Amino acid sequence: MPETHGSVAASADAASGASSGGVAGRTVLIAGATSASGLAAARALTDAGADVIAVGRDRSKLDDLAEAVPGTRVEVADLGQEESVADLADRLRADGVRLDGVLHLVGGWRGGGGLAGQSDDDYRALEQSLTALRHVSRAFDADLRGSTGAREAIVSSTAVERPLAGGANYAAVKAASEAWARAVGQGFAKAARDAGEPLVAASVVFRVKALSGLESTLADAFVGLWRSDAADVNGTVVALGGGD
Image (tube, rainbow, N blue to C red; front, side, top):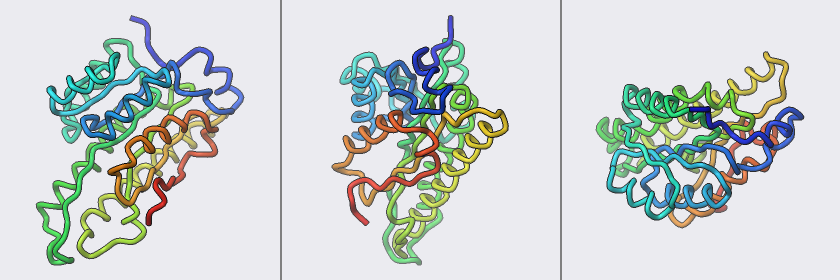
Protein backbone atom coordinates (compact mmCIF):
# COMPACT_ATOMS: atom_id res chain seq x y z
CA MET A 1 0.00 0.00 0.00
CA PRO A 2 1.42 3.43 -0.89
CA GLU A 3 2.31 5.72 1.97
CA THR A 4 -0.12 8.42 3.08
CA HIS A 5 1.99 11.42 4.01
CA GLY A 6 0.54 14.86 3.38
CA SER A 7 -0.49 16.34 0.07
CA VAL A 8 1.51 16.74 -3.09
CA ALA A 9 0.46 20.38 -3.34
CA ALA A 10 2.04 21.15 0.01
CA SER A 11 5.50 20.22 -1.23
CA ALA A 12 5.86 23.41 -3.26
CA ASP A 13 5.22 25.56 -0.20
CA ALA A 14 7.58 23.45 1.86
CA ALA A 15 10.37 23.76 -0.67
CA SER A 16 10.24 27.53 -0.43
CA GLY A 17 10.08 27.54 3.37
CA ALA A 18 6.61 29.14 3.28
CA SER A 19 3.61 27.99 5.30
CA SER A 20 2.53 24.41 4.70
CA GLY A 21 -0.63 25.57 2.97
CA GLY A 22 -3.09 24.13 5.46
CA VAL A 23 -3.83 20.79 7.04
CA ALA A 24 -6.00 19.45 4.21
CA GLY A 25 -4.74 16.09 2.98
CA ARG A 26 -2.45 15.61 5.94
CA THR A 27 -2.56 12.81 8.49
CA VAL A 28 -2.80 13.84 12.13
CA LEU A 29 -2.78 11.71 15.26
CA ILE A 30 -4.58 12.78 18.43
CA ALA A 31 -2.96 11.15 21.45
CA GLY A 32 -5.43 10.74 24.29
CA ALA A 33 -8.40 11.51 22.09
CA THR A 34 -11.37 10.42 24.21
CA SER A 35 -11.90 13.75 25.98
CA ALA A 36 -13.99 16.75 24.97
CA SER A 37 -10.79 18.30 23.62
CA GLY A 38 -10.11 15.22 21.53
CA LEU A 39 -13.59 15.32 20.05
CA ALA A 40 -13.28 19.03 19.23
CA ALA A 41 -9.87 18.49 17.62
CA ALA A 42 -11.09 15.54 15.56
CA ARG A 43 -14.00 17.60 14.27
CA ALA A 44 -11.90 20.65 13.45
CA LEU A 45 -9.22 18.62 11.69
CA THR A 46 -11.76 16.60 9.71
CA ASP A 47 -13.66 19.74 8.73
CA ALA A 48 -10.36 21.18 7.49
CA GLY A 49 -9.73 18.14 5.30
CA ALA A 50 -7.24 16.19 7.41
CA ASP A 51 -7.17 12.44 7.95
CA VAL A 52 -7.50 11.87 11.69
CA ILE A 53 -6.24 9.00 13.82
CA ALA A 54 -7.68 9.04 17.34
CA VAL A 55 -5.79 7.04 19.96
CA GLY A 56 -6.85 6.08 23.46
CA ARG A 57 -7.23 3.18 25.88
CA ASP A 58 -11.04 2.92 25.94
CA ARG A 59 -12.47 1.17 22.88
CA SER A 60 -16.06 2.16 23.62
CA LYS A 61 -15.17 5.85 23.94
CA LEU A 62 -13.16 5.68 20.73
CA ASP A 63 -16.10 4.08 18.94
CA ASP A 64 -18.31 6.91 20.18
CA LEU A 65 -15.83 9.42 18.78
CA ALA A 66 -15.71 7.64 15.43
CA GLU A 67 -19.50 7.74 15.28
CA ALA A 68 -19.53 11.46 16.14
CA VAL A 69 -16.81 12.29 13.59
CA PRO A 70 -17.22 9.98 10.58
CA GLY A 71 -14.00 9.06 8.82
CA THR A 72 -11.90 9.11 11.98
CA ARG A 73 -9.64 6.10 12.34
CA VAL A 74 -9.47 4.88 15.92
CA GLU A 75 -6.65 2.91 17.51
CA VAL A 76 -6.49 1.41 21.00
CA ALA A 77 -3.13 1.87 22.69
CA ASP A 78 -1.75 2.52 26.16
CA LEU A 79 0.46 5.50 25.43
CA GLY A 80 2.15 5.18 28.80
CA GLN A 81 3.63 1.85 27.69
CA GLU A 82 6.49 2.01 25.21
CA GLU A 83 5.70 -1.39 23.69
CA SER A 84 2.09 -0.41 23.07
CA VAL A 85 3.18 2.78 21.29
CA ALA A 86 5.69 0.82 19.20
CA ASP A 87 2.94 -1.60 18.21
CA LEU A 88 0.74 1.35 17.22
CA ALA A 89 3.50 2.81 15.05
CA ASP A 90 4.04 -0.59 13.41
CA ARG A 91 0.31 -0.96 12.63
CA LEU A 92 0.16 2.45 11.00
CA ARG A 93 3.31 1.93 8.96
CA ALA A 94 2.09 -1.48 7.83
CA ASP A 95 -0.90 0.35 6.37
CA GLY A 96 1.34 2.86 4.62
CA VAL A 97 0.45 5.68 7.00
CA ARG A 98 2.95 8.40 7.85
CA LEU A 99 2.06 11.25 10.16
CA ASP A 100 2.13 14.97 9.48
CA GLY A 101 0.96 16.05 12.91
CA VAL A 102 0.45 15.02 16.52
CA LEU A 103 -1.68 16.66 19.18
CA HIS A 104 -0.87 15.41 22.67
CA LEU A 105 -3.89 15.43 24.99
CA VAL A 106 -2.97 12.85 27.63
CA GLY A 107 -3.30 14.67 30.92
CA GLY A 108 -5.17 15.13 34.16
CA TRP A 109 -5.06 16.90 37.50
CA ARG A 110 -4.17 15.85 41.03
CA GLY A 111 -3.20 18.25 43.78
CA GLY A 112 -4.08 20.15 46.90
CA GLY A 113 -2.89 19.89 50.47
CA GLY A 114 0.01 22.28 50.15
CA LEU A 115 3.54 21.09 49.56
CA ALA A 116 3.21 18.33 52.14
CA GLY A 117 0.24 16.99 50.21
CA GLN A 118 2.23 16.43 47.01
CA SER A 119 2.32 12.65 47.22
CA ASP A 120 4.39 10.27 45.16
CA ASP A 121 1.20 8.49 44.10
CA ASP A 122 -0.17 11.72 42.67
CA TYR A 123 3.13 12.53 40.98
CA ARG A 124 3.34 9.10 39.32
CA ALA A 125 -0.23 9.45 38.05
CA LEU A 126 0.49 12.90 36.62
CA GLU A 127 3.79 11.75 35.16
CA GLN A 128 1.92 9.46 32.76
CA SER A 129 1.23 12.46 30.54
CA LEU A 130 4.97 13.18 30.23
CA THR A 131 5.69 9.50 29.66
CA ALA A 132 3.10 9.34 26.89
CA LEU A 133 4.54 12.48 25.30
CA ARG A 134 8.03 10.97 25.33
CA HIS A 135 6.89 7.65 23.86
CA VAL A 136 4.71 9.11 21.11
CA SER A 137 7.11 11.85 20.03
CA ARG A 138 10.00 9.39 19.78
CA ALA A 139 7.97 6.78 17.91
CA PHE A 140 6.82 9.24 15.25
CA ASP A 141 9.76 11.64 15.07
CA ALA A 142 10.96 10.20 11.77
CA ASP A 143 7.47 10.59 10.30
CA LEU A 144 7.28 14.25 11.24
CA ARG A 145 10.79 14.99 10.01
CA GLY A 146 9.90 13.36 6.70
CA SER A 147 6.70 15.36 6.27
CA THR A 148 6.44 18.34 3.95
CA GLY A 149 4.73 20.26 6.75
CA ALA A 150 4.60 18.77 10.24
CA ARG A 151 3.13 20.25 13.40
CA GLU A 152 3.32 18.80 16.90
CA ALA A 153 1.69 20.38 19.94
CA ILE A 154 1.13 19.83 23.64
CA VAL A 155 -1.25 21.44 26.12
CA SER A 156 0.48 22.96 29.15
CA SER A 157 -0.61 25.17 32.00
CA THR A 158 -0.11 28.69 33.28
CA ALA A 159 0.99 26.91 36.49
CA VAL A 160 4.42 26.54 34.88
CA GLU A 161 5.00 30.27 35.31
CA ARG A 162 3.03 30.63 38.55
CA PRO A 163 3.34 27.32 40.43
CA LEU A 164 1.47 26.87 43.69
CA ALA A 165 2.56 24.67 46.58
CA GLY A 166 -0.66 22.68 46.31
CA GLY A 167 -0.03 22.04 42.62
CA ALA A 168 3.72 21.52 42.69
CA ASN A 169 3.55 18.00 41.25
CA TYR A 170 1.32 19.17 38.42
CA ALA A 171 3.45 22.22 37.62
CA ALA A 172 6.63 20.15 37.67
CA VAL A 173 5.24 17.64 35.16
CA LYS A 174 3.95 20.41 32.90
CA ALA A 175 7.31 22.21 33.02
CA ALA A 176 9.09 18.99 32.06
CA SER A 177 6.63 18.48 29.21
CA GLU A 178 7.29 21.97 27.91
CA ALA A 179 11.03 21.31 28.01
CA TRP A 180 10.52 18.10 26.05
CA ALA A 181 8.38 19.89 23.46
CA ARG A 182 11.03 22.58 23.01
CA ALA A 183 13.66 19.87 22.58
CA VAL A 184 11.53 18.32 19.85
CA GLY A 185 11.44 21.68 18.12
CA GLN A 186 15.21 22.07 18.43
CA GLY A 187 15.57 18.66 16.82
CA PHE A 188 13.39 19.73 13.90
CA ALA A 189 15.45 22.90 13.43
CA LYS A 190 18.79 21.10 13.65
CA ALA A 191 17.74 18.43 11.16
CA ALA A 192 16.67 21.07 8.66
CA ARG A 193 19.84 23.11 9.21
CA ASP A 194 22.12 20.08 8.85
CA ALA A 195 20.36 19.10 5.63
CA GLY A 196 20.57 22.63 4.26
CA GLU A 197 16.81 22.72 3.87
CA PRO A 198 14.10 25.14 5.04
CA LEU A 199 12.37 24.31 8.30
CA VAL A 200 8.98 22.73 7.61
CA ALA A 201 8.24 21.11 10.99
CA ALA A 202 7.26 22.84 14.20
CA SER A 203 6.70 21.94 17.84
CA VAL A 204 4.38 24.24 19.81
CA VAL A 205 3.20 24.57 23.40
CA PHE A 206 -0.36 25.72 24.03
CA ARG A 207 -0.70 27.07 27.55
CA VAL A 208 -4.04 27.41 29.37
CA LYS A 209 -5.22 28.23 32.86
CA ALA A 210 -7.98 25.64 32.50
CA LEU A 211 -8.88 23.75 29.35
CA SER A 212 -12.58 23.39 30.12
CA GLY A 213 -14.49 25.70 27.80
CA LEU A 214 -11.50 26.17 25.49
CA GLU A 215 -11.77 22.87 23.62
CA SER A 216 -12.81 24.48 20.34
CA THR A 217 -10.29 27.29 20.79
CA LEU A 218 -7.52 24.73 21.17
CA ALA A 219 -8.73 22.76 18.17
CA ASP A 220 -8.85 25.84 15.94
CA ALA A 221 -5.44 27.01 17.13
CA PHE A 222 -3.91 23.63 16.35
CA VAL A 223 -5.42 23.53 12.87
CA GLY A 224 -4.20 27.09 12.34
CA LEU A 225 -0.58 26.07 12.89
CA TRP A 226 -0.47 24.75 9.32
CA ARG A 227 -1.30 28.21 8.02
CA SER A 228 1.85 29.68 9.56
CA ASP A 229 5.48 29.33 8.54
CA ALA A 230 7.11 26.60 10.63
CA ALA A 231 9.99 28.93 11.46
CA ASP A 232 7.56 31.43 12.98
CA VAL A 233 5.86 28.96 15.33
CA ASN A 234 8.51 26.35 16.14
CA GLY A 235 9.47 26.44 19.80
CA THR A 236 6.81 28.98 20.72
CA VAL A 237 4.42 29.08 23.68
CA VAL A 238 0.91 30.16 22.71
CA ALA A 239 -1.45 31.35 25.45
CA LEU A 240 -5.09 30.40 24.98
CA GLY A 241 -8.04 31.91 26.80
CA GLY A 242 -6.23 34.96 28.17
CA GLY A 243 -6.03 33.63 31.74
CA ASP A 244 -2.94 33.62 33.92
